[in-house]
Length: 388
Image (cartoon, rainbow, N blue to C red):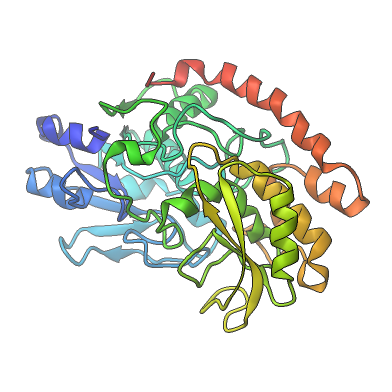
């Protein structure tokens, strides 16, 4: 399997005479595991400017921590931060592209609507095109594969940094395909090229690539967490811990006062495919409940291909709502620069789950409605696909 970066390095003469910027991060490496900006420089095509997404160019910051513009310590190239102290920092201004004629985008996505790198990439690309630059997306595998989609489409009114696109929660697109879909929706017209992979198929989950998994952000160091993320991320919208501050983020969930055996038993009774639930205690070292002993469960992934993470996340959130007692509560602090809409609505792309739980309604009727959204999306994405 060769990524878009690998293929560009094989034909690096295409960059001769170009003055380009590179939006990338620590997981953007070539087949020899060299960081993208260093591999390009060694090939005789050094970037003139770097752009960093949330967590910073090297992925050292936690979620929702502002990063400042910087200078790359290895090359002396300036780094423009695309995640600052306010929502305006998420879209680069025209002067960020001064003197450039091309923007390369090389980001390892994880296949979930609310993972912020896709929004960063598309918004940066739109700004670059408006500034007269071309945009080349160096494509990478969707670690969850490209066949399965899961969940409702984001509804109007729930737009945000974690809901920039009308996609299912698990969208089954590579980043390059997502760009092609958004280019059509946004009427870009031209200037976008996707440097496609070779040797990747839609049925391939990450292990089929034969490459080591490099954490694209600080709290996704393990493949198990990546495959659970499209569901376990919903816990971010509550006062419970999603395992940040531990060695198993997005596998551990709980809070002080939660009864581990009761939660594990209730989850097991729901017979979620591909996973098992271990009652446990844990103590986050930072983030929610830092220093406190939390009761909860560890979710073990037994079959990557069988997991239905979004439905699991919704059912888990509902159980925590019903069983968590005083431990449960919705996040009431601003979430990704939005203060006037509950975080759970931003993540689910709908008020349906929160409303059903508040009113004692049947949230599973909402789950049943996903099928129509999934079918509509599968029909709509067809001409954006690059791989069989």
